[in-house]
Amino acid sequence: MTSATPERRRGRQLPTTEELRIWRDFVETTEALNSQVASRLQADSSLSPGDYAVLLALSEAQGRQMRSSVLAAHIGWERSRLSHHLGRMERRGLIRRRECPTVPRGAEVLLTPAGADAFRQSTFPHLRAIRELFVDALTPDQLRAAGEIAAALREHLGTRRDE
Amino acid sequence: MTSATPERRRGRQLPTTEELRIWRDFVETTEALNSQVASRLQADSSLSPGDYAVLLALSEAQGRQMRSSVLAAHIGWERSRLSHHLGRMERRGLIRRRECPTVPRGAEVLLTPAGADAFRQSTFPHLRAIRELFVDALTPDQLRAAGEIAAALREHLGTRRDE
DNA sequence: TCCAGGGAATTGACGTGTCAATCGGGAGGT
DNA sequence: ACCTCCCGATTGACACGTCAATTCCCTGGA
Image 1 (cartoon, chains in turn cyan, brown, orange, purple):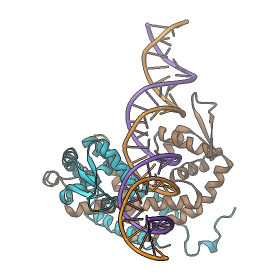
Image 2: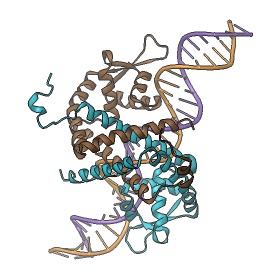
Image 3: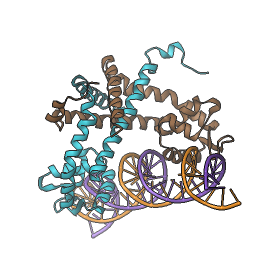
Image 4: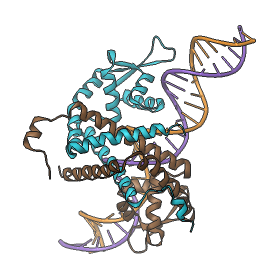
């Protein structure tokens, strides 16, 4: 029976019921959306969203190759996550790894022809899925608002990172 | 029912650059937000969001117990996912499973005292984290818009489910 | 009686993600 | 030269999710 006293509610420490409803709705919906997009991508091209992100970055890179840690920074992944993922992609022949001539202990990641091909094949259906599942679901105002919400959330996360 | 007009469908199969930017922003930001909320929950109470969802449902259930498949439906999980998760939670002593007397082959899931305790301890910090990381980041208008966007996306996903 | 089928739940295999070691070189200081 | 420290990358252990079997039991024909 240590429920919030009136004093503790001062300054609104806890979300209201309505705010909480929106939170749950928001989280569950974005999860469902992600999983739909992922399963379409999988069905269309046997790629995961992670594969797609890596292949996209490599496709746009000079010489279709990139140092491992640069790639990680570029797509915003932890290095160990990338290392695991590259291992799986290498097994499937989508990329290759090679020692970097310039950086000691560095690794070059390079796109194989099969990887470039898989990426090319996947692009169109993937973008179409994004349009159908995300863009088409929203009015122009809502789409704009979604962008602003993302910016506000990210900004807020950033400012809180120092704690 | 503001479905895409024939013109719209024919004219623009792919998202524009701006739409795509919003999509990426939206996806990455919601992922970052989820992971922040999850890591706070973990730090505050050693629970994952999955644990929290299960414990919340059981806490609100009659007699603090529920049939496994009812629980799965209640939190919107696949049964096999729930089964795996319950296994992990049972190892940690948060829940227990018992044969259901009424349903053949049915399983009752019930909250242990330790599980009830962990949930009670986690609630306040978790709700506070939601407030700080989500609610506080947005203006009232943006919060309302987030709810509407979630509703629109979910509605749209639902209508496309038949394909 | 036997057995096909169906529902509830579990299991196994595997992809994915995080965290904490670990490895293998160069610097830099002494 | 030796030793320490840092840096790039990998590895191992484990949590989490999904999909495809599989198990167990019950029920409804033939």
